[in-house]
Length: 294
Ligand SMILES: [Zn+2]
Image 1 (spheres, helix red, strand yellow):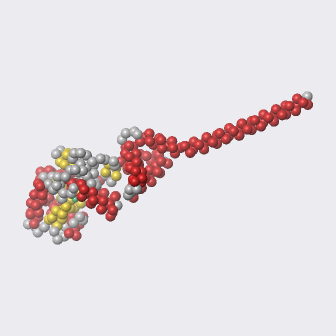
Image 2: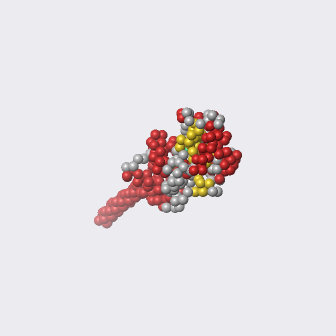
Image 3: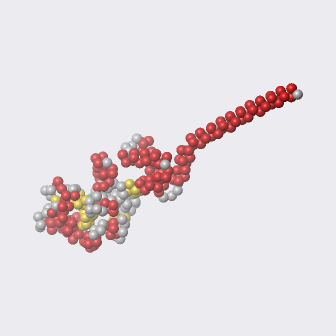
């Protein structure tokens, strides 16, 4: 009996030891796998993001934007404060996916521009009207020079103004893609991209590239050129009231920045020809609204 008791005791100890080891191993596995899956989470999220990004529409551009900004970094290219901000937001978004929808809006549209949009091979006409704005760019090689008809109309208008003691001058009319490129860059360097986008077009998007846009000022009052004060001067007011009779409209009126994409520009006139300019002027709306392309 004693022998059997002793052997039972040994068995009992053995079973206990094996159980403890088995438990330890099991706990070890659980701890190991739970750590591992936490580490894997960001990767899974990223994979998920890539899958989402392969879906059509908005997400694709978001992906491109990320790739572009990464490419910029690799190439050591200048990154504007705006782009840096975006990259930071992207990183934040990886941690909080619910913000995705809001983010998409911001990425696909930047200061009125469609991010990732390519310049077209042909200019856009709506109801026979050549359009150049933040949504409808021109081909890079679209290079018509100053429009002859618009120049003649301007001279006629200047002559009429002269009779009232106003000496008008068009200090900027046709601008090539390349010129606009250097001009826009200069403004971005000076005021930053967000500010520059309010008053200067990116290359390919300027109405000046059509040869139909005339920046007008008064000779001898150069300090008012390119200012909103020009709109309150005698010359500015005369233009607002009479330009349509010569085929021009004030293209970027007050309070229409959301529609035209530009702040009030008292000096920027667009030639449309007398009938259409008169119609647009009388309608009291912007060219975008008039043509239904806002
Ligand atoms: Zn202009």
